[in-house]
Image 1 (cartoon, rainbow, N blue to C red):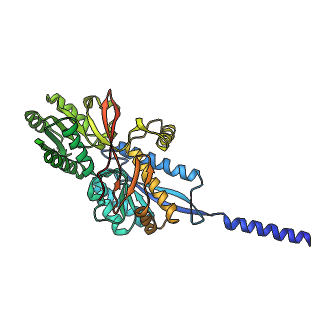
Image 2 (cartoon, rainbow, N blue to C red; image 1 turned 45 degrees about the horizontal axis):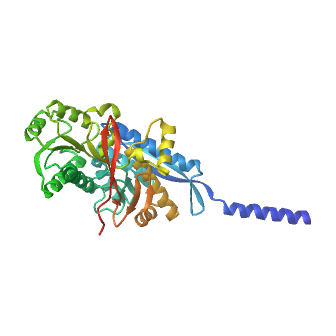
Length: 382
């Protein structure tokens, strides 16, 4: 009899223990849209590397425990080839065929804007790490970004030119066919003139017509104090070389896309300033830990895109923990109501929109290195 009682008690303990353990074999399916091929493959590489590191870190810790269920994160990656049509196809595949609960990406605004429309219609949360154009999130309830917006960085670069560098005349060269480049050029011009500056030249081009000889002739003739190049990293080095070859010695200024420019391509950018999201030489705490783990995994330092992508996954995982669910609506609501999140790129907080309140970093190019110059606080919130 005593043996029977002992067996019953043992069985009871085992069953009790089983009830307390999370259930196994649940999946949290997350889509990733990245430009693995196309014109900006360095962005794609950094995106995929950071995404895989974020997912591996969580899964190695046993996954996510949500409402007493254990979830393994499944990463489903689509290459959009830095092309709007391929981006839309990738988004539709992830939503309709791969049944993802959320999407990270796309990165470039020219791809994030169309993808955001489809995510909004399908009611699937989308977080773009690197897109800065306001149209990505405008009038949308399901779309978020990790980066600051172009309005902020365009204004800060114009203010830096006018107040810190003492510039009174400026020139801009930009790709009119790209949402990102065009918006930054417009904001910089408007803000610089509002402070009393003069736009001496406002030159445009398109990616399919890269001959800039006439544009640089106009800029040289205008003799501006600063030249703003809000263009993608794969174009800027050659533009800087052409400017110098044309005899333009003015101070160069840039935007956050410059963070992807490889060290071997920075010679013509010596002394330039640009806005950024992440200063690796100022990393501390969890940012320093992230840098060490990234180095160990990929034998190189993370850049802005990698840090922003890692933060996008961190925000999504935190939203899942807070909501106790992988259901898209609950993830969306958790992102909207989440208190300030301490990420690799600084504090991130959503207030009544999918645009975060966060600081920017001003960087300079010195001896081929990107060097921290200063933090720039976000504009005051109403």
